[in-house]
Length: 418
Image (cartoon, rainbow, N blue to C red; front, side, top):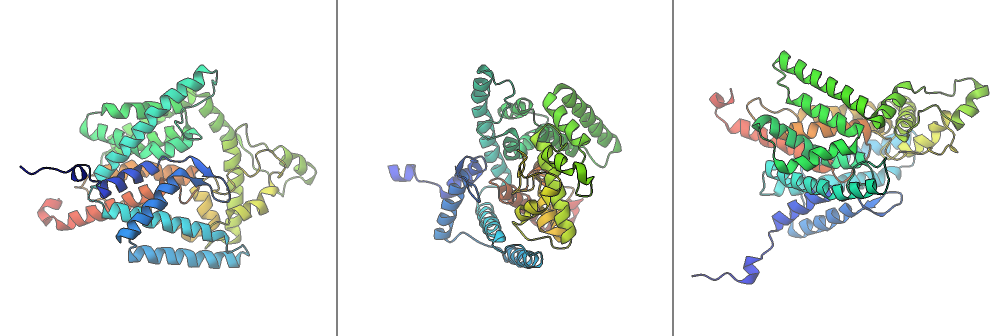
């Protein structure tokens, strides 16, 4: 009988390590260094693993990927020059986008695991993150912090939602298709109630809409009705949600064309509602629109929204106002940041890529695509960072899911495609 040596018994499976650590890095948002670019714990994982992949010769760049990065850099340089913004502003953005996109493509394209298995591994980490958050939530509540909302080890509930939403959507979609809810997903799903976040409510609502069979008008109407009733219920029961919705709907943007006599007072105390979320949305929306009008085709170049903010935000709010500069770097929304920095070309390119890689043949499962689409919707609306730890992980899963499904469809006999 062949004996198994201790070295062989406990041999490290590199592919298993790389997938486990990569999916874990999605949740490691703890800041190690705060500066021009915040450096997170997850960045260490990505950089170390990139070096390991490079040493093994498995850090790869697809030629179309390289073309895309080259065009992105070229257009950003030209846009920055035309709008008289510093070209150096784009260097960090291009490096970040290149590093994260190449790394995640290399990991997910080269792994032996299926994308479905990768999603399950990621979902396991998401559940662990949720479970970790319950003692923290209880601790804060026990110490009289009545306004504290569930966010696990993240700085705020919205960040928790961005990292975990595809896992929550994945669990709900599997529940819908397989008629069975896995008990391990319950802590994650219930944590969204405790997070009391408009981001979470919207993400779950979009997921429910995607459950509808769009070939059946009856089922679509049922899904829409359910979401409308749920949204009204959440609004009625959550004072936090009421505050954000009411402030956003009642906001009046005051521009430099306002009455000159009252403009100074208005910028010192802008009527942007009582919460920071509304303030960030309104100010960055105004700045993005002004920057877009200056260069509507190609924008002002990657990384230049900060300069546009300094230039245009003073038209509606004073720099002495306590919230001035909120989300100045990421524009509070990917749509707003793309509008500001890449113009119409960037907005249309992102829309095209989401639609193109979202096409799944009718006879093949859509669960992975539909689990990530709500995340894309929220990122476009609310969070403008290009290479946050989770972003390219989900982008690459979304794109590779399309490519793999297309390959399967082409391999099937024509009779099986019906």
